[in-house]
Image (cartoon, rainbow, N blue to C red; front, side):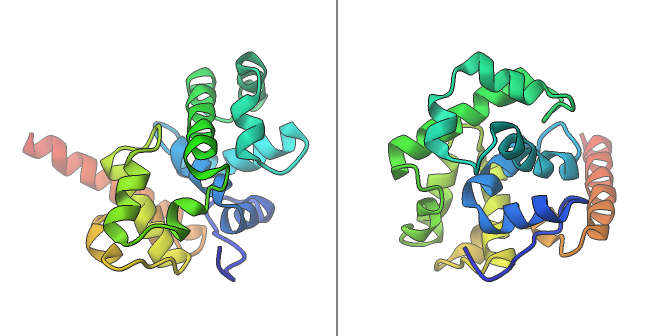
Length: 188
């Protein structure tokens, strides 16, 4: 991806290195970042890789027996709060990467014509909606130097994991997210 060697989003340097250097790990970590603590979600790809006994590979995950993948997600410790559903979503994501990008996760952004094309590609991925896709555009632009034309206007314009430079920032981000949710409650 880039010459950045760590995305300090977990308390484990090996997991942080994997996020910075393996596009599939980064996509899976972002997928897992829902209804679960951020640092644990982004630790998930590392746990999955360790349990599989080899580097993450979209084709390998896509073709795995579903029950076997669910067992890997169950752990202990569980890779996610909802191990079965997130194992299935991870497998669907990997199948889309195999089908649409020949198994090359980075091709999602390296072959995008511009920011709008990148955002459309991300939104088309299983488990990626509008907000998650905008956050991922921000991660690519702010943390990894992947900056197709127009990305800045399309990236999330609220506090996200893309703003986390060092692990201590995760706590600040958690507080900002809590305050945003509270403000939404008061409005609605």
